[in-house]
Picture 1 (cartoon, rainbow, N blue to C red):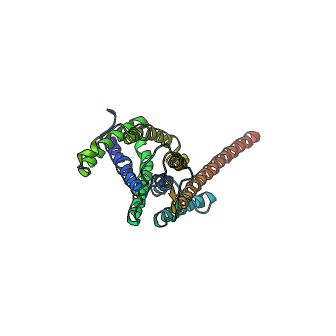
Picture 2: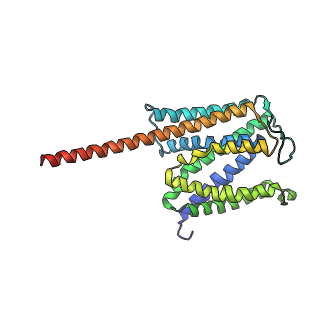
Picture 3: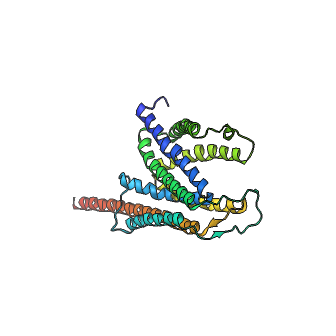
Amino acid sequence: MASLSKGDLLKIFMQAFLGFTFGFNAYGLGVKYTSATLGAAAFNCIPVTTFFFAFILRVEKVNTKKASGMAKVGGIMLCITGVAVITFYKGPYLKPLNNVHLFQTQQAHVSSKKEWILGCSLLLLSSLAVGLWFVLQVWVLRTCPSPLVVTFGQTFSSSIQSFVVAIAIERNPSQWKLAWNISLAAILYCGVFVVSIGNYLSSWVVKKKGPVFQAVTTPFNLIVTLIGSEFLFKYGICLGSGIGAILLVLSLYSVLWGKKKEACCHDASNNNSITNSVQVEREILDNI
């Protein structure tokens, strides 16, 4: 990191606070007040919020007169609707179909209406923070072209920031003790795979394909979480969460379809321009 300027270091530090420190902590609290399944569903907001900030910061363009632009705007509307359904409508509790579970846990915490709304709000804030973080990654990678260096700098900066926040908030010494249990396994898994490997791959994809394209596999988070909750634990979901999750997945693919349609039209336009240029050159040569 010796080749990085002070401006680059400041960008990486602020990016770490936005995407890691604030985003992950808000997400963790949101999952605590709602459920793991809803947390996975909230991940589907990230591509939509990414596109929203990309449009605001003029990284992406929208032409509402074309089908691609209408699909992008429709995706944002579906996302807003899905978030509203999840937040304000819980509906009946749907018990898991599988009665045999690998881990025997206590009954899932039933959130009050106030906790539920707070948790959904935190998940939305987390999605907004991570969406903005993805867009600003392009800004950072322009001056620091190595995704591995950016990932290391952000992870290291976030470790310091999170340590300071944890000391300020958690004063109970017993909460800092680690034991050989599933909690330690979850911490190691999150640190190694989610933060380190996952974010390095995210930075690499953002650099190669852009911030919106990175989110194409986001719905798999929800699918894997539903399967894990069903077969590993004894957690079900609320009807409102299921309906909202479907709307969020639809919003994701609406935006991605618009993005793909726009890219295809752009490629076709370029090919036509090249063909026309070749024809003009041939006509000039024939006249000569």
